[in-house]
Length: 266
DNA sequence: ATTATTGTTGGTAG
DNA sequence: TCTACCAACAATAA
Image 1 (spheres, rainbow, N blue to C red):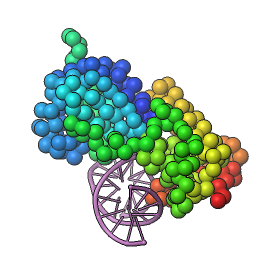
Image 2: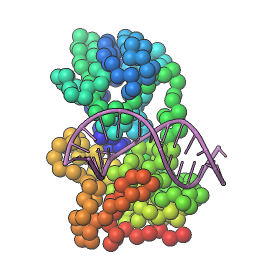
Image 3: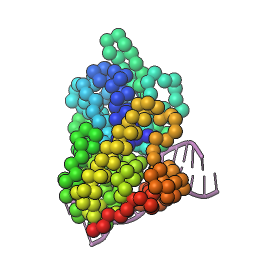
Image 4: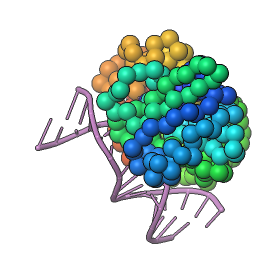
């Protein structure tokens, strides 16, 4: 379930389970797609016995710094999820046993669709080092963003927000919710968004990220959808009551309110 | 059977 | 190097 808020929530969970400063005693996997090195045995061998020095997040990626200077990069793909001390799960792909002093804990990774990745490397992978600023950790510099998007005359503002090198961690849902909050038509050309509009979008992003995070802390995915318009096509806009519509934009389904989300003009 | 899915990457072309 | 576009990846749930 991974956009920035879900991944941040995952990091919080992993920290709460004591992964930081713990020793990875045992790793079990047979999944040669998710794991890299592709040979599960090599992956396991590289991890077992290592101590986790630090657990970081940037955008939708997690980075574990290990005591031998290797790094484990984790991306949850579309359906990746961590649980602790759980029984064998239907879509279980990787299982870690960690120890800290006398305490032992099991952390398992499930991923039905198998788009998640766990990459063990001795330096930063491209996907990590090309990430733009993280809106939650580093804040949003509206002026820099406007300048960055000035040449994107064909690309929509929504696609631009989802470009991980522009902002790290914004995905389909957070982009939809933020643009609704900012009252901006997601199809507006990125280059047409000026500083004052970008301010509204930035505050929309902060708003949806904080809300989603708070909902995760409270409900851990159960309960009803915390989203205001994502997944609500055909229902009235919570703000202006006009019926919400859904369409394809750059290959991703997009929900918007045709009543109160206005196009940015060049 | 059909449709939709909260993501990234690698290729091509300009 | 940057922008733009597209197909591919895998496997489910409704």
